[in-house]
Image 1 (tube, rainbow over the protein chains, first blue to last red):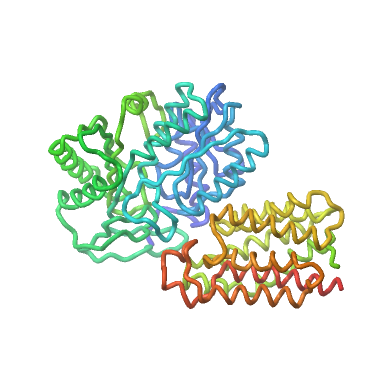
Image 2: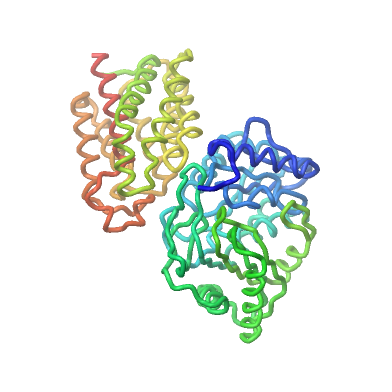
Length: 331
Length: 207
């Protein structure tokens, strides 16, 4: 294992310290927790958005804290859900009285820990609602999940729920907007190389030099199949096919596209993929209204990428265009 | 008729911790076969901290002991077992509240509450190769009234744990293995067995 770390046990804490120092105008760390919140939290009169999950997916989730996006992000250990005591600290710190909305990725541990915190918060009189994101079309059940996994599409949920809350939406309206995103967003990824959790010290799976894992999860969970590496257009085609064939009817619709790097794939390659996706969608008369290329939801130093399509309507387009000022997301 | 005092509740946590610590490697082995191999480590950390907390505090009620145990377990075990064991103790404490002494009937109802809470939290039913497979028959057994004794409790819990060996997992990480999960005892049901074995020990000492 070759990593720029001190003690493996200190990775998450030291990362959060460094992040807080990097964005002192935007975020602060709640003392003795792994929670980062908006500097000005709680924001009066606004529904607060809380997300989080295991660490190792940077800039998710703390990179999305800011005006028009998240009010708090709760960091767990590497690839491990945060515990309810941490989540409830976040909920308490950001609630302005308008209620708190939780964005949860569909992993067994995440769902249980966030729901537990939700019940504790409700017992304290805080209104809480939630959405569970499950955009990954690759596998139905995985070593981390019952049902589909939540991956890069989660960033669209942060954006839309955040914008809806910033526009004065009620807790119910924020939930409806977030549910619309989940219902209309599909993703799939591919890995060219594995990643190593600092505490484990070894790569979480093995790939030969000429192999790729299609349908990879963001924790290195197995996908659908292992294939020989292919040209960018062929890989993009394979992922795009699966996304388009799934249950959302993208035919002649308008979509937002995200090409997300998993940690070690250069932007140049992500742009090559983006170029193919755009040409293919044009061919199919699917109109791309927004494009996002970069690292949004990573898997440590894994090489590979995911593509996400979100079908948009007037409301979603407007919310996508609304202001967002977060360390890892600007509109 | 058995009753439980706050002092006995503390002893229950201590005895459970002792069993978990001495079987830590075994729990890890079980989890390596069909899960992600961290159950021994997580349970050992969680119950170590729970014992440290309840042994060093003063309690008037059983509910108070369970509430602190729940808080520690849910924050220290992690993964999916943390919220599940946390929920179990939280539900028991919520049911018992500030009852100064807990009768067997109270306790049976508290365990029933814990079971329902865990089923809801894990969205699991009996027969899915999880800790529910031990909690369910134990809850049924405790409701039994006068036939309840320590020896029989261990028997019921042990049999239930062994029973998970022939079950195909449909919940939890092991569900991913489908048929390959057969032939292995479920690690969560094993840690739950230790919990009830410890309870039986507490009762035997109280007799």
